[in-house]
Image 1 (cartoon, rainbow, N blue to C red):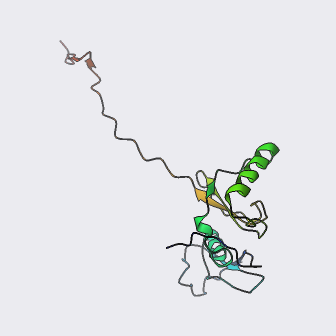
Image 2: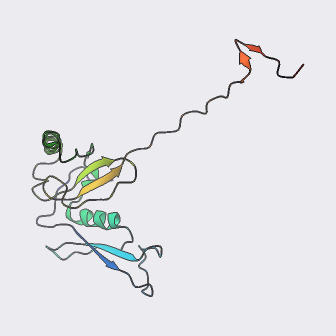
Image 3: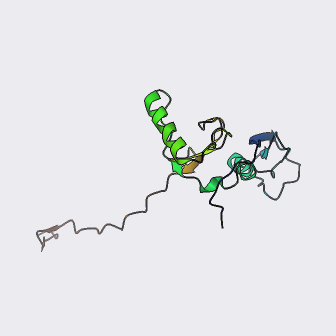
Amino acid sequence: MKPLVTTPITGCRVSVVSVLRDEYEPLHETETSLFHLRYWSTCPTCGHTGPYRTDENEAAEDGHDHAFPGWRNLPVMGARPYHEHRGACAAWEADALRVYPQGWFEAAGPILTERPGGGTRHVPGRAPGGGFDIGIPTPTRRPSAEAEQLDLFDIAGQRLRTECT
């Protein structure tokens, strides 16, 4: 069971490193051969490093599991407003401060935001305190029930003759 309380580890921060993987290097068990970049998280404070990943988001999540245990239980905010709407940004940040744990953003904790489509990259420095903005995919709509095809020649319940006379 996941912890309900989220408490940052004092002083720990999340940093994600990326390097080009040599095609002849052996793969780590958490990597796939489809990509040539290798990512991992590191904590500049305590030296903790996460496993190699082929996905940048997974590496960022490893780092957050270390520095911010329980972060996955935080509420998901709506998408952050664009920067040109300063009033909307200020209201959005005020909402985040109200629903996230006290001191969370001062410790550079992440914020979880709903993102539509494919734009779900975890963006460093975009949370109110300078932490990561963790992209959570918007739930997709369930497909509606199959529509029944009506008879194209049915008018007012009467079937029209379709043969030539």
